[in-house]
Image (tube, rainbow, N blue to C red; front, side, top):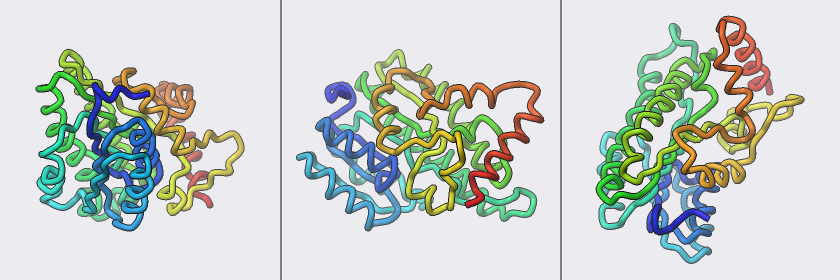
Length: 262
């Protein structure tokens, strides 16, 4: 069970209303962590909060769009009076999937703002406080997309590659100060968001992870940074790093097209 003395008493889960984020909330509440859950949709957010309160912990909710200019100020308004020992950034998504040269630059900026800038803002704020205390943990949700380019996902894949290298650097910097950092790399995961996107989970031989298993695995391996690949996908990640690249990229693209063929 996660050490409440090291990573508590409060945890912030950005993207904490459903899927993996909701499962993180449930696991943490069972371990006695008080929670601040942040998500855009108030309905699912309050449903998750009500569910995890049954474990006897305090839960604060904040419904906001992380792309709002004052998002960090609003988050600080509900957390500055408590001691946050764990940050889970589960909010990154491919909010604008489109071929790059025919796409809209504002849409692409939104992907970068969510997956890069907001992740940096929250990691900077809470990481500094954890460094001062000499304890804490940060889990950044990554993706196998960050290991290889893909059609309709140029900015998303690039942002996840950025996140991976950032996590490695942050891990190096905070480790001497007692703060654990890990990027939890997800493969195909059966989340509501992926279901809404129309992913085909029935491809023979494809590994499909369940959100509860992914959340549990991430918490179990928080000390195994800077990178932990969830759901048994280590071999797939290694293959994505193989050279020469051309055929690897084409093969991965074919797999992605099959995944989106539902």
